[in-house]
Length: 452
Image (cartoon, rainbow, N blue to C red):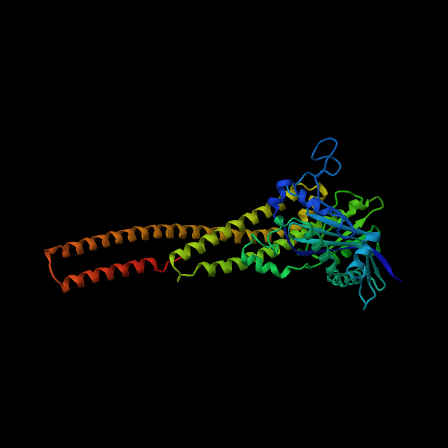
């Protein structure tokens, strides 16, 4: 007998779409809104995260107690249901289902939401029915769902089609460069370039059960699905008695009561989707910073170049670091602002996810690298000041040498004036020696090696 239950597959995507948020914010992301309303976009409902306008005029109210974030919560999302869902899969020559041929388990989505963010990542959230003909017990059911979730990369063309079609509608001056990585240092760009095409990174599975389901009627059975890094059992995060939320590493669980509303149950997948996207960006940014710092250290430690070349190189690296620090600060402030404006239930989920997934540890790792970058920046600025002083001293010495040359010329005139008539070998040797010494001194000054 085939059993059917609702499941959500939540996959973060590396999109390669980096938007200049500062420029887009100048007109309140109006250009992005216009792009999302283009008539020739693929099928589906295209939405933007607009600010709520309430008749009361208040930014927070009892409808969801959510405030307004400084930047939009996401860039755009494409929601596929019904005929649009079938047409979207057909357009990219894909089957609108995931099937494990070995076990006969099958996932049939009824809703697919592809959400894009401005920092190069997005999410693909598929919700639907999981059919399992051989699921006898909680562990067996979990194993079948996990096995089918590994087939999610088959749907990468659907995400890629969404990203490419939307990116073409955006004004070129909003994109960070031709390869979507400009204004980010070269080392970061090279690391990120491996995701120039959309790629599904991993899948977080959300199991949904009805209250009284024999697979989760005991706490130990929930523990068999929800994995955590700590021995303590998963705790119910719901602030409403009509449903239960449990989150963990890789798997989470929803248990719904008879009075639970669909919009309430769908809150957990949406919050996990957002945390997934931010976590994916944090993970890649941490790696990018490591490689960038390694490349930076090797590049600026070149000691066999002249002072003018050194100044040009260090000024370029200095500006790269400033751009990178600004980029990191904007990303962090956007993340914090999103959390600050969550409603109470969403915040409870968000806090548990960051604790369970170790998001703050990732932020701390990045913060440590940024502190090191700031120290390198201070060293570069100090070195530049020394180099500026050295070049100034060079010009002073050069002008001094020109003064000495003028004295030599005066000496020549005097010696030819008649006080020393005739050809004098000693006089010529002294003059040549002084000129050679002057030339050698100037050459050494202008071509001396400079330490970092």
